[in-house]
Amino acid sequence: MNFQQLRIIREASRCQFNLTEVAKTLYTSQSGISRHIRELEEELGVELFIRHGKRMLGLTGPGKEMLTIARRILDDAGKARRLGELFTGQQDGVLTIATTHTQACYSLPDKIKLFRELYPNIRLVLNQGTPEEIRAMVSAGTADLGIASEVLSNSESLRAFPWFKWNHKVLVPRQHPLADLTDVTLEHLAAWPLITYRSGMTGRSAIDQAFESASLKTDIVLSAQDSDVVKTYVKLGMGIGILAETAVTEEDEGVSSLDVRHLFSASTVWLAVKRGQLQRDYLWQFMMLCNPNLSVDELKANAQNSTAASEVAYNFEI
Image (cartoon, rainbow, N blue to C red; front, side, top):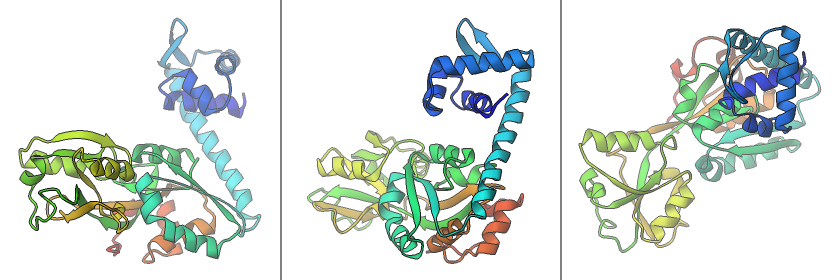
């Protein structure tokens, strides 16, 4: 039995037993994956996977037990590696942040610039994805810190701390009939083709909920993963955009932005770490650069204990 076999069991579960995806994730061949599985089953004397021909459909009873063991062993191995890193100095290393396109482009640049001034020898990696992908990266330990709205605060495997609240804005071409409107309503918006984030992305649930509560049907002609795509197609005249206020800047030419905070509920951006994971001090320092109301002691205590940080009262109106 070896670590690669344990990784295969864990990734097979994550990838819905698609061995092609498992091979891509682990940078190996599909035949190598199959060989490792066969050797492990022979060593244990039990079948770990439910099969239909050459396809794997799920885990057997012993397979489910083995998955639990594999996760625990790999997690402990990761902690052991991180323990070594903690005692090799805090002035160099890598900080991997998983976040959305909107946060990477509009909320993080100033924080990252300041962090680099404080820690010039720390290399940064920004992995962009959906909130669900970000949650998975932090849970798996492939990212040190996750930054996104909504999903991160509801995960049992993570500890999430608030960064800031934000509202939506509506973006329209400058000559649009709504451009000079001072009191925008949902009815005004529903009368036009809409361009906004796709489901699962930045505040989309708040948009859907607002229109549904008002019993209004919408014509969402384009759904996108990031704010720049929304802005591009608004400028082309395809529709009016609903996006995060942080993504609307003075550099956006040819468009007007409308304040619609009275129409959609505010969203919160969360900073999330893996629960119980050993972390280097520069991670806590980065989080405090984002939200100065946090302290190292509070972060460490809440990241280690069983009380969700989202239940702890912080003043995070930034």
